[in-house]
Length: 262
Image 1 (cartoon, one colour):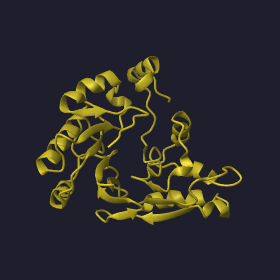
Image 2: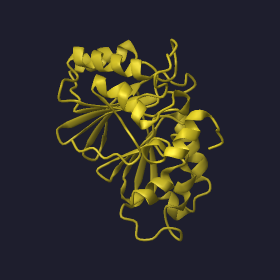
Image 3: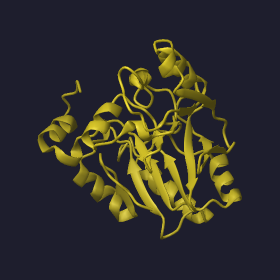
Image 4: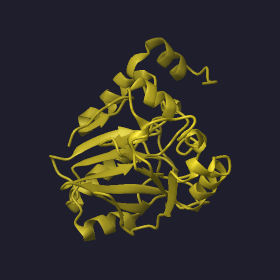
């Protein structure tokens, strides 16, 4: 919001799909992935009832993915007629610290509406009808960052935002477990800027490589829907430009408000 670079100026002028908030996703109204500072505007802009989610899975503690201050108002006297009385937050130790800090300012009644569960790499978690497998990723070496394999109703997705190139052990695990993905969402922060080794993000080249590896492993095929998400202004992510870069590889660039049915 402070930036005056050419990409940001172009996005402000063009508007529409070129205006991007921080990444978040909701599945079937009750499963939320990440809780950025833009959660409130997401709820307003897309007419979401944020009191419907039961499960909040957090990839890591960076503030653009977990900013829990608004959760302190999830209950009386600030919020009435909540549809779901209890939210379980899933995350790592760094996420737990932020969660605990938010709880310190909650009234006792609001605190009762939250509980926390730690995630461990490769250990499946059952959240209602969802089975979630956290996969370790290279992003911030100071904490355990995760992407998620999410299964429900015979469908499986890979939510892979905010990560560098996937570890070989992750590719091996997916191949060994014979996990087939109906949908894959990949980090594309760098866009077409070359990502150095051990970079904490991927770009178009990384997404194309990951897609090829997943298809080679048998984890994906021509029916799998591939998306790129989590773009940075440093890569000039104008929607038309992203489509020109990604669509030839069978990868669809996302935009705010995108809905996908599997």
